[in-house]
Length: 104
Image: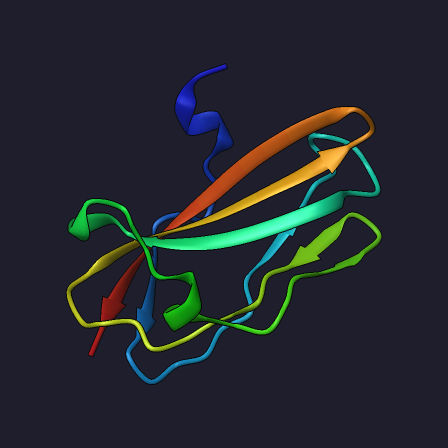
């Protein structure tokens, strides 16, 4: 599996500084009924600094095979972020991500 195979297909995405977006991931390619969902966001340009407490609001939720991420908010214009989602299906743990660029 190529490293990019774990990147969410729509990546990269662009999000305005004042936008609040709840991204989603359908886990069907990995399997059904994801559990143990953990979502974090990193500032790529700042040495992968964990900015989860600043740029995520709320908690992830699962409905069937769809994970809804916490709200992504407060991104800075011109900065690149990596939104990562780790989840389990059965005894396997997977991780996927979206690259997001903050815009004015």
